Image (cartoon, rainbow, N blue to C red):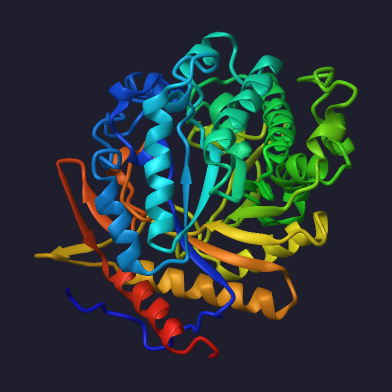
Length: 461
């Protein structure tokens, strides 16, 4: 194995900080013929929706290479692996008849993790809504929340005896607003009112799914958000920044904390919706006590007043009803154009603790798409290694502040289908190509493996 090129100023991993890696089903599994269709299959079929035109197959061929990937996780030495269950692999029609082979795959995955001493952490929804349910209206319809709760029960019945940490949803802001307002994610809608309905029904589905999980004896049910610190570039941008914060963060934190939809957001969206889809009893269901909260952190959002001058309104469209705004990231940025701000992770964790005091926190995704070079069997990605080191150091600082951070998961184990960016953006610790499924650990993977091995040698450090 090649040696990693690593920074000289290393971070020491606390022995009680759970370290893992994360993936999601549509991005890595492939083998779409063995499951039902989902909205990302349909979206990928629309010309121009995916930058490079890729589809769900072959992805990273995880279904056919699962044993190899399990061995890779064992080699890496992680404590935990966060994966998502494909709803249409388990329920090809979204509800009703359960796919035995689909559940068998996740059985093999969970058993393989446990056999290697790796804790499985399951996410029930990472954006792959069955197409059949989308044809019935998708997340803007209340019935989808009920079908999601049923699905949660089906999966927990099979895996709940071995998987203790469950996330109901991954980043419901993305599913609601990138999917239904800006249209850059599946299902590709540009309907602001529908986005707010979708957001509420995603949270309602979460609440109902929590009930199903707990009824099966699951001890650690929670949810994963992408909380983003919002910064106003100028005084004139403050109103827009407040609105962005309401949609990005408080629309999810406040209902989860039992405070309901933020009053200022209701007032600011009167031209779009009257919020009559929020029914009696919904707020109590959504506020079901959380065993933990996941935070997917990548960047901060800097808001400037006034619309973009190039006519591209997709970013602002993700915040329906907002005053005219544009985003103004400062260098350095990743290949995604996302500003690199490790201290922003501490800010995001403070936000979570303030909104949901006492709830244990996990950093469930953190990573970067950056330049890398391939040199034979070696893959050099020094920027990613530095990024991971800086953000792990931020986690250590957050813990020193007293924030209840229990774990950190790097995104992602493998290069994969980066949603609308396809194969053009690489987040993996391990190199995978669309036309070459060979798993090649990058320097960042070697660096993380070395840190985990060092912690094992000196557990009390």
